[in-house]
Amino acid sequence: MNYMAAGGNLEKVYVLRLKPGTDLIHGIEEFAKKEGITHGVILSMLGTLKDGAFRNPRVDTSLPIVREYEGADQIDTYAFERPVEIVGGAGNIIPKEETIEAHIHLICSQDGAKTTAGHLYRGSIWTQAEIFIAKLSGLDNVTRRHEPDTGLWQIQIDEK
Image (cartoon, rainbow, N blue to C red):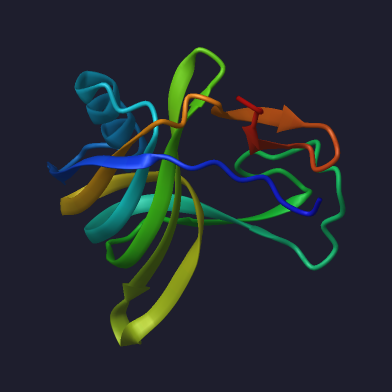
């Protein structure tokens, strides 16, 4: 079979505002832990970042990826040290080992409407971030685990 799937329920929707200086990823993870969100979907993100870094595959990236961190030679890291506008974002919140991880992809723009996008490694809020998060239930069999074939932490679905 070429896919894994699991069904769950939408339990509650939260509106979260992160304030200046907050790390976007850690702010979402901290909120999720406080509210007991083990499984969630990030529906929408708007706001600004003052700095951060994205990851994208390079044209010569091959699997498995064994060096997947900011600045690694197997991936493309785009770091920025200037304000950018978050014009769109999505992600999920899933258990990873003993913690909860927010996996986020963003599209950001800067002067001249130049856009950058990718998997977010890090990002500090400049003015604010407005985030809508849906808490999901019934997905206890969904976790994020390291997958040797890709070298990445991927969603895994165990049979119930």
